[in-house]
Length: 78
Image (tube, rainbow, N blue to C red; front, side):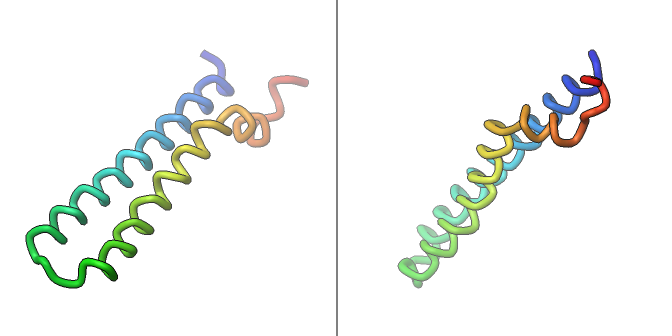
């Protein structure tokens, strides 16, 4: 496996990791809100933002991994 393919796979794994982290934040936040019962409106937006931002970055990394790899590693095409 050459370095471009390896970098592509590693970037996709990083994206999947960020998606899993966002899902974990969302689930734990919902459970926390359900158990405490207070501050649902304000807490919901904080949970939504703190879980969707890593998930969105992860999806972006997964979808753009080839472009990122091409920008990082240009030496093998020459």
